[in-house]
Length: 90
Image 1 (cartoon, rainbow, N blue to C red):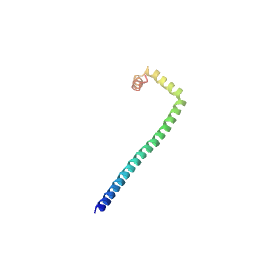
Image 2 (cartoon, rainbow, N blue to C red):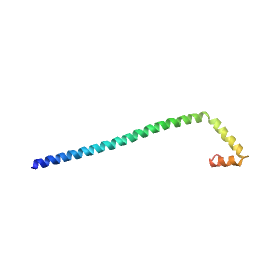
Image 3 (spheres, one colour):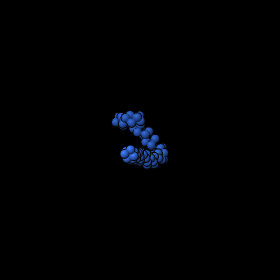
Image 4 (cartoon, rainbow, N blue to C red):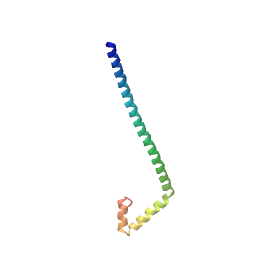
């Protein structure tokens, strides 16, 4: 009788170990997927930002000229001045 109780206890311990291992595997795979997904999203975001930075650097002179012309226009037009103030350009 003592051996059957020990056998049942060992079986119960093995089942508990299997449950803990399965839970740990699910948690690890979920965390791994989340990290992988974030890296993929960040990589695509970095690509888009780099393209925007390159486009801005190519047109930097034109952007500055546009801002200066809007500032000159704001001296005559109050609505333009208000818009430039709202975006902290004046």
